[in-house]
Amino acid sequence: MSAALLFAVGGLTSVGIYLITARSLSQIILGFSLLGHATVLGLLVAGGAAGDAPIAGTAAVADMSNPLPQALALTAIVISFGLTVFLLALAVRQQHLTGDDQVEDDLEDQRIAQGQPAENLPEETTEEITQSIEGGIP
Amino acid sequence: MSTLVVLTIAAPLVAAAGGLFWRGNTVARDAITICGLAVAMICAFVVLAEVNDSGTHVVHVGGWQPELGIVLVADLLAALILPVALAVIFVVEIFAIGQRRTVWGANPELSGPLLCVLTSGVSLAVLTGDLFTLFVAFELILVSSYVLLTNQGRPSQIRAGMTYVVMNLFASALFLFGVGFVYAATGTVNLALLTERIPELSDGVRIGLGAWFFVVFGTKAAVFPLFSWLPDSYPTAPTTITAVFAGLLTKIGIYAMIRFHTLTQMDDLGSTMLIIAGFTMVIGGLGALAQSDVKRILSFHIISQIGYMLMGLGLFTVAGIAGAIVFLIHNMPVKTVLFLVGGLIENDQGTSTLDRSGGVASRRPVLAVLFAIPALSLAGIPPFSGFVAKLAVIAAAIAEASVLIVVAALVAGALTLLSMAKIWLGVFWGPPASEITPVSVPRRYQKTMLGATGLAVCGILVISAMSGPLFDLCVRAAEDLKHPASYVSEVLS
Image (cartoon, rainbow over all chains, first blue to last red; front, top):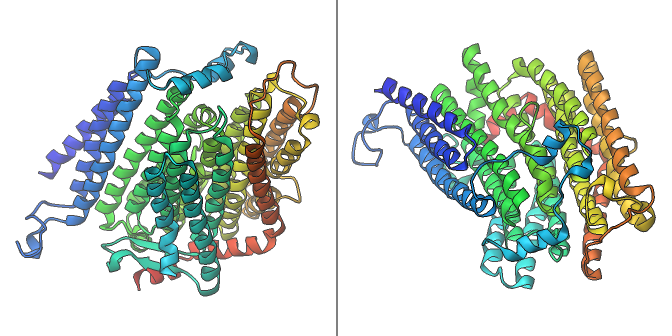
């Protein structure tokens, strides 16, 4: 039983990490969902063998499963829910701005790697920033 | 006393809720956030005084036993870090109230309340006595930082924000796995119990856990080679946000590392940490030299400075850990002030690129002074606090006869000074740039921003002047960490 869970954790983790290395944010989000499931499953496995529901008075204490990792897992699930929604919002914003949801390289890094002087770097002007703030999300 | 400890976490959280509720009303919103941050800061100072007099104070939240419930532990280390961190945030919020009128300012409706949420997370991370609550505190800090970084929705922010979010989410997932591993190996996540149980584990498991958490906290702290997300993302945020991130976020990572790795006696990882610390210092310094933008140079300095703190920790001696703690306390305000001055330069010149600015020293001599003091302190020039901090770390390394790391630290110090000189030459000296377009800021708000920066510079001078007593306190805190028997008995009693 525990071995099956461990293999599930391993499988979810490897697929999750593979997806996170992708360029497209939607794939990354899927990757994080899988990784989140893997961590929660890992916490449950860490709690030891499964038993009866840990509700006082319904079963003998010795037969109950460990409630602490379940509490930790619940907290972790709530956090990963919120973060998935945030990542989706980020992907939508990127789609509005550039038409796709690719994670782009850093301009300054590219400039230094190519040995170009700083003048060649396109800089956001004050007007552009003002526009993008006032314009909001299209 | 327990109320004061809890208030450092609860007051900013309540203020955040109030600030969001009245987000349309500028005066009420600002008053609520400032009050919340001020209450937390004052409580933190009182806690420091109390802990200094009467020793570690433990709060068992909800009256649960430490094995089951959440404990908040105000030991000397936590009590030392907390007031500095909260004072830094307080000053930045004052600055933010001035800056939000400009295009470089953060979105006023969200930034104040979210800064309060972040503050609450910082307090919780510093005070918590168990690993899982530390995870929750990190998430509280990170979630508010994600929103603060990206909420203006500018293209550069979204681009950099993605790297930042993905990198930190991955580290959080590793953190959660680590909590699972620790629970499976020891049956607890309480730090005091871990202090007893982790040293009893077999060497392989023990060092594995230590290395795992080194990677987790190392990603948050941006050590080599896990720092790439930092210089890409920090400069894109509004000044006030970058200032808070620079002053606090990476430092909380190092703080968690100091606490976890000393309490669980991971001395075997010391040499690995020293090697990584050397690379972090030198590569951060070289990276700073290669940049041509004030904010990006300062961002690479963050990485370089993290190396010094890691070096102090990696020695695993009382002197080394004390040096790391002093460095932490010195670095938080200094880094923040440098970014605030960077923001003022940006307002004055309309850009933070070195090639497009110049002559600030003659136009705005006050700015030059406000920049020079923290810059010299960061480079480790006496009599400022940076000198004391670097001296403490390097003296501890010499005492351990670790020659290579001392050489690396001195090289990194020289690189820091060089890149500071680069900023100075580019921005403050030379003829004024040909076409500058200063950002128009009403005079009243300009004064608020200058005043906040001046206040923080005064704070740095106070830390410099008090570095003797401060260092003694840090040595005591380091001794408590190195000999955790009293920590354990306080928490478990």
